[in-house]
Length: 352
Image 1 (cartoon, rainbow, N blue to C red):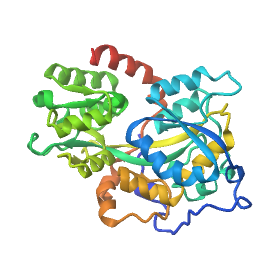
Image 2 (image 1 turned 120 degrees about the vertical axis):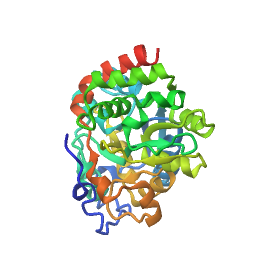
Image 3 (image 1 turned 180 degrees about the vertical axis):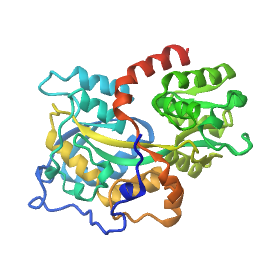
């Protein structure tokens, strides 16, 4: 498994990079486009609201571009992309997906090979967040989250989280099934593998038998943490920061087994009906202002250079030099190949 090294993830972070909107004559088709509509596939909840607040209303609405959000979990949105593959015009222009799911949709042949000349702000993007078929919007790492009042001693990693002794204080988020499999595999192998599905199943069945709880969404899970129904789980560090800001009693621990990275990004559908506006959306999301706003509002690290993030906030959402060495990129090919099997087992066995 390749690691995202500090020199890669943070390449160019010290360089100043202006991200102001260029005049249409200097940009590509994305900035020359004015008016019309763009349909954005995205999760609901906080992320959808912040897309509207930080990107759509301030940057696209003034250009006369009407943004329509198609809110749903990533699984049904991916299914729809594949189902619409043979149509000359699909129903969604741009899809918000994890890096693993962006890879999967590219393998399915339903994503546009990006023309980066149409995304002027892409010149500022971190090299590790630039894909032929998509762009990383924000990123974080998967960490153990716990309530110090309920969980003692302090956990050190995924193995401590997935210890049956915590019983019904162990929590899971339904939509995070892929990351749960990865964490369980790492717990079972001491960090040696993120792909040992069978050992992961053994770990998960043990905590299910102990009374672990499953919540349908991030928001439902957060409420359970707040009410102290549960006390330990794993989630992206950005979410821990969000919930701490909301007064939810929780702390984060970077797992000793390694820190799987999470990248949330966007792809353009190959048969997008409003392709120029999809490019405009991608360009807008890479502007300096919304990138900084997502760090403040959602606790995620930005994917472009030259951001002005307060040092105290950067300390909370980022990672130390030692932790950065433990950041692990995911095996997207493996996840694409095994996603259906993992989801089927999760739904029919683990949730049953």
